[in-house]
Image (cartoon, rainbow, N blue to C red):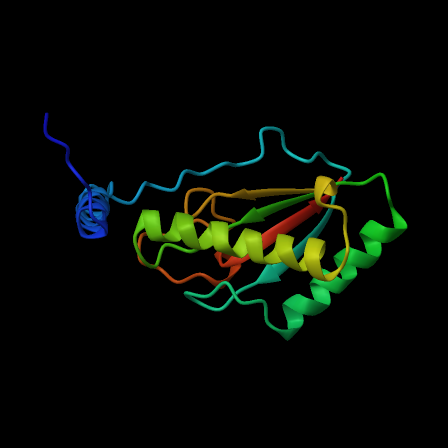
Length: 154
């Protein structure tokens, strides 16, 4: 009867090979899907807009003032919900723009929830990339009204 003894080197080698095999099988990046609001906010919604620079999801000083206005409105109306919809223009690829609109929506949501203490269950985050533009344009046309996060309070 023979007995095998595993050394730490054998265990480390098996672990390293397993890790390398797992890394080699990383799936390709998934396509980011649009998720527009299932139901429009309605005619009585109060709308705010946060504009963005091209290729950016950073909220500038003017956008911070808009977030402050939304925060005040939300605190004064505790039964209202905010629906945030991120958008982009058609500069860049469709998948990139979908991701960018998602980042923009998340940036505004984070500013409301984490910086301004609006309850997370009162903020719905959506994004549509370049698929639902405020101003229709051809491909690769920069349009400032489309680089926006729309906020509907309803």
